[in-house]
Length: 174
Image (cartoon, rainbow, N blue to C red; front, side):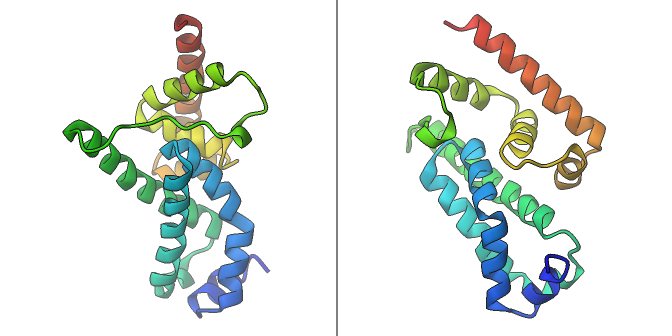
């Protein structure tokens, strides 16, 4: 059924869009939460991904991996939103906030969790993206490489560097 999904989406089959959302909506949302840091922004990003899916349905017939296609779209949407947030923060129009949701982690140690997400936010964008796609998106390095336009080895290296940097920064910061 999933193999037939691109054709059904391209044909405008409403049930296919619901199926795509049911299959990938939650994992896209979790990934968007990590990339953007807030529930409202993550919801907006996922909504934009699926709206773009409807708008670009004529191109979907060439898609072979809907999951990868949706994650590429999410990465582009989240990048635009993140840049907009940074521009607003730089001009003083908005204050960047770090949100931590109870569903994000099992620990009751909110202070540590809040610090962890501040440290994640300070990672270079390339490492932060790979980290979110791997952990929240549950993607393989090969899939991450295809989404980011890099090799699987580069994706794995960025993930490893991100984890090393997180460990180092968490040990350094009080």
